[in-house]
Amino acid sequence: MRPITLLLVALSCLVALPGCRSTPDWGRELAPGAQALLPLEPGEPIPDLSRAWFDRDAALEALQRSQVWLERRVARDRYPMAGIEHRRALASVVRLGQLLGESPDAESFRDRVREEFDFYKSAGWDGRGGGVLFTGYYTPIFDARREPDSLYRYPLYAKPEYIVRKSDGTVVRELATGAELPAPTRRAFEETDMLRGKGLELAYLKDPFDAYLCHVQGSAFLRLEDGELLKLGFGGTNGREYTSLAKELVKAGELPEDHSGIPALREWFMKNGERLFDYTRRNERFVFFMQIEGTPHGSLDFPVTENYSLATDKSIFPPAAPVFVDCSVPNPETNGYSLFRQLMFDQDTGGGIRTAGRGDIYMGIGDDAGRRAGRTKAVGQLYYFFLKPELVSIFAPRADEVAP
Image (cartoon, rainbow, N blue to C red):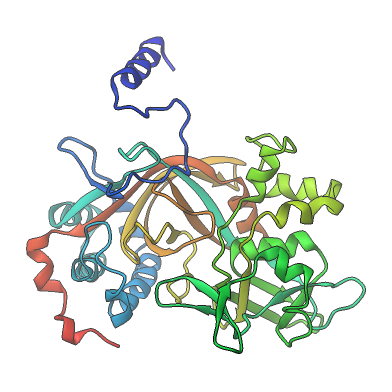
């Protein structure tokens, strides 16, 4: 960085509102009443969506999943969000699909989107658009067994009936008497017989770190001894807060902060296997699974799409909405990094994806996707875009036409 640039950065912090920090706090929550989306100011660059036209078949597949969800009545209960009404979100996806399918070339598509849509950026880590930390997630493929043996001893569980998610989003343990208790923690589930031997075991893995990784990723494809591929998707959680294994190891001085991705975590486990549970049980969140067909489902209960599904904090961002991600991701061909400027859709969430300063890119299935996801840790910007209010009535159906 040039000296004059350093000086400008320093001066900007001196004159900024209180709270300007030299080191971004990606887990920083928005101030009470603050909006997660900020309209772009006049003169700010508008994202260039022209590349999406060349990949429109894949983009339209992901878009269609967002549209089907937004057309359901359940979607209306999740809006308004970040100042966006449900009807506007639905109209935006409908019109974007039309433009992808009808535009004769990339430039026409780009220009029509800029003409008909309003653009916003994430408030980011500082609440003023200061940027977003993007990571990656994927669906691992591991060897597994239906029944335990001397090697395969670490189960993945279906959700028991007594773990119930209430209408307000809280998760409780229902007793036979009808009373409710807080849902048990990860430690409680793993150190007692609450789950063991109750017919909830879906499969067994031989590596406890792999089993824990399935919890972090929220899905897994498992190769069974007969060659069958058992596909497990997200089946719910105990509702407890997520704590990052990587952050705990960095805090304890076990790993450096700049070397705490999945490969480094696995290497640490190989050397310190007997201490793994000491750290994983600091994460109180416990994930349950369910058998699925096709590709893994996200938190909106429809399949996620490689490079097109983004996980964000659904308590502050509009679900299923179109977004544009501008960051860098690992390039497997060069072993370096490449720009990732991509139309995506806000279709998932994650235990560690909280606040306006975080986003998680779904990178696919298997080892190659896992290597990319494990190396992805990039600062960039997250944009949302919605149809201009005066055009909404043209492309959104009336409320009584929305599917159940």
